[in-house]
Image: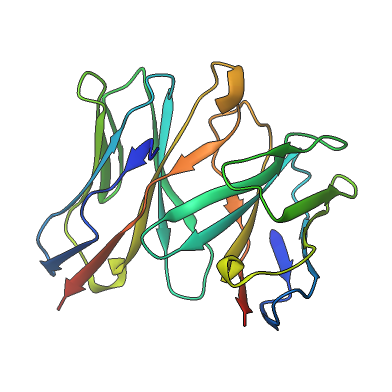
Length: 114
Length: 116
């Protein structure tokens, strides 16, 4: 059981380049999330998708777009990368947005923007 | 506006002693709370949770206490083991609807080091 799978695990970009982080879950979860982790800031929510076909902004959405491709997949796109987007990105999923159940996280994608 | 705060960036304890990690929150709409543990180069993993209708939840060596009036929760690890060395995040969520619905808000994390 793979759980939540993120690709790529590492990426180096130059300022202005674009890229897409891919995330897939095999737990049949309805809700999916993208967080970023920065030193001293904890995990901050970028975007989330409560169910297939819906997406909403989180705490720090500027500079990002998302696509809920189907129930399994939720991608995060950086259209024009900036050094401030250097971070570790985590995708997560949960069975229902309104449950008290925990989020299941992927292993993370470390992005460096030069 | 940091709605969930972990004011201690780090904590160091001896093996076998108690570790106490603290977390404060400001949003009274939060009605459930979770603790996550994170090792380097891995994603956070769920540790323990508590609903706002309870004041204590226990799972083996881990106990979470919730003080709603103080908007404070703590995680106790007894006895602490070197393998517990990790970053611990507290998180809070709300099922009350509105803009917080379904989202977890995380604290900054506390680095726990357990010395042999």
